[in-house]
Amino acid sequence: MASEAQVEEAAAQAGQPETASSDAIVLVQFPPVWGRNFSPFTCKLETWLRLARVPYTVRYQRNPAFSPKGKLPYILDGGRRIGDSGLIIEHLKRSRMIDPDAWLDARQLAESLTLQRMFEDHLYHALVYARWVDPEGWASMKQVVSATFPVPVDRLVGPLLRRRLGSQLRQQGQGRHSPREIYAMAREDLAAASIMLGSRRFFMGEQTSTIDAVAFGFLSNILLVPMDTELRRIADEFPNLRRFCEQMDLGLERASLRAEVNAASTAPSAWPEPGA
Ligand SMILES: N[C@@H](CCC(=O)N[C@@H](CS)C(=O)NCC(=O)O)C(=O)O
Image (cartoon, rainbow, N blue to C red; front, side):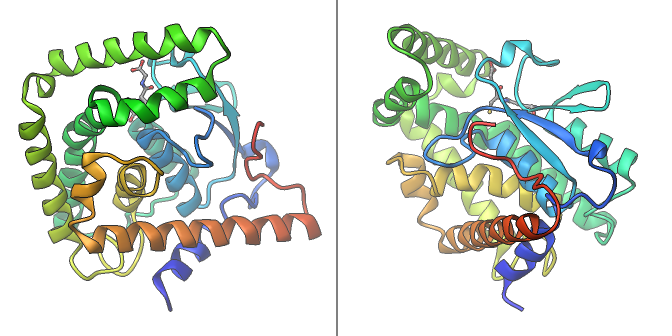
């Protein structure tokens, strides 16, 4: 079975309620950019929901200030608002009694956690730098901000966000390095991810698990968005990372199309509609 077919198989079921539709959670995230989930953390969570076959609908929000943790994503589950992609996944595992990681042994779980921390707590900062601070990425981000916010708000919001994120990077520490140092460290992260993936279909082997959703959230935002960045050129040094991303992407897209066909012939679709 082709690997994208496995992703498709798992994800195809996600929008199809297996229980009452009132069990569908609401995923609150940024609107898409270039048709893609443009935030690594919201992309991670949405991918996980699809791989774990959790029914959901999407609500778009531009301002993360109104979320439980001041960041996106968050979910609405019944009367509860829960923030943080990792805490949301733990909540869903517990409350739905599902675990895409149940087949992993203790070592694989430890490797997954280590990789996850690297993507989320190190590579993420290089991604923010490449998008917002590096003049090359900023040239594209200006267009993204213009497409997201109305005139003349966009002219204020863009530079404001750029200053804020630059200052957050300096506080966190990575922003104190030179561009060469930042990208050299990012290359080390990507090289480590590439070695961990090797020639396997997914990060932990032949089946998907949570770390594939994490990796796809970050790698697709580096490799599959139409932005020229130094980070993308570095990621392209590792062909297996692109292969992984493209297989995941194809599997998720096919699953989405399949779900739409199923929904048209059976029940109302629970798949997110653009602008919903
Ligand atoms: N640990 C959080 C991180 C979420 C996060 O950093 N979200 C970013 C978007 S990628 C955000 O909302 N940033 C807005 C801000 O910091 O004001 C998670 O896993 O959900």
